[in-house]
Length: 165
View 1 (cartoon, rainbow, N blue to C red):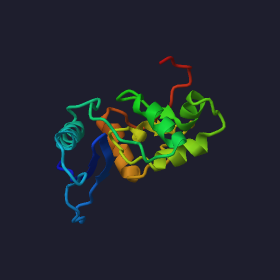
View 2: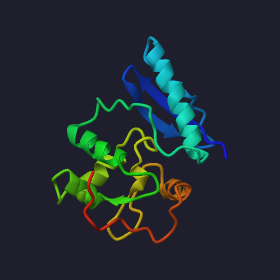
View 3: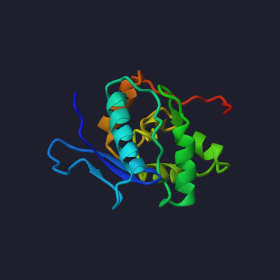
View 4: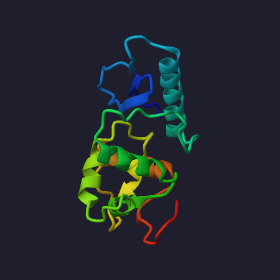
């Protein structure tokens, strides 16, 4: 299955990724005004890695993300989320606890809803503590599809044990 996507790139890395619907006409990328070698390299690497991931051939991304324009809490949530292993899920509560803010599950969900680089930072791997999917900026059908791509089907449960980094 072929997927279209939009990539926004800066000198520091990938600023945004959006999957396109078949009806979208938006073209493939936005680069910094002067397309330096690193900008072109990040864009090409992101495209290659996203295609490989969606084809089931890639489990982790190497392309750097530029999260510089985001609030500190959102960046912290995304850094923790980026470390969730392929084929595993964690709960919003788990992330909140990792950040030392056990009552901030809803704030974690709000931060994930603003993830500018979904798929690369795998917010689809974050579910509710009761095993329900929760939300996803790209829609629940995409969340299900991405989790199934990673071998997770129905009956999702976030681990209850404490994990070490």
